[in-house]
Image: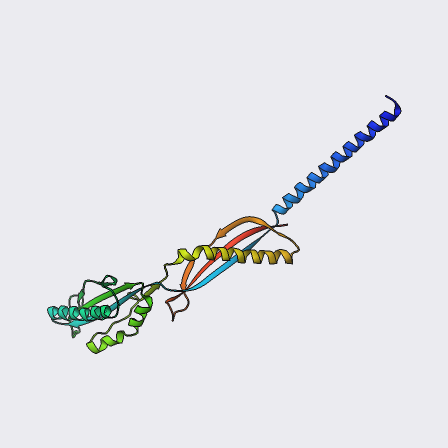
Length: 237
C-alpha cells in the first residue's frame, strides 16, 4: 500500500470515529433531555358545573290528633286521611304516588313520668307520603296545604319528616360534563405552560373526581347544582 492510500484510509477512519462520537453525543443528549422532561409536569384541575331542576320529590304530610277516646281518635284520623288523599287525587296526584302509613298511637298516660295531670291521654300520628316526578305540581300543592286548616287539619314539619327534592338524571350529564372539565383543565395547563415558557405535552396522569349534587341554596331546594372536578397532570416540554 502506497503512502497516498494510507493517508486516505486514516482520514476515513478518523471521520468514522468522529461521526460515531457525534452520534453518540446526540443520543446521550436526547436521552438526558427525555429524562429531564419526565420530571417536568404540571398538575391542573378542571371544573364543570350545571344548574338543574329536581326531577323527583318526596313530600310527607304529617298531622297529629289528641284525645281520651281511642276509637273516636282513630275514626277522626281516618276521616282526615281521606280528605288529604282526595285532595291529592283531585289535583293530579295518582294513587300509586300516594302512600298512607299505619297510624301510630302513643299512650301518654303509660309513658308519663310527671305526676301532673295531662289533658289528653292519647296522641295519634298520621303520615301520608307523596313520591312523584311531578315536581312542579307537588310544589304547587305544597303552597296550598293551608287549605287543610279550614277542615281542622294542621300539617307539621319536622327534621324527621322533611320534603326532599332529588335529581336522578346524572348519567345523561356525565359525558358532557367530564369533557368540559377536561377541556377546562387543558386550558389552565396551556396558560401555565405559556407563562413558564414551556410547551404542554401529553397526559401523565388523570383522575376524575366524584360528582356532587347539592341544593343551590336553602330557599330553593328544588334547584340543584351538579359539580365535578378533574385533576390532570401534563408533561411540560
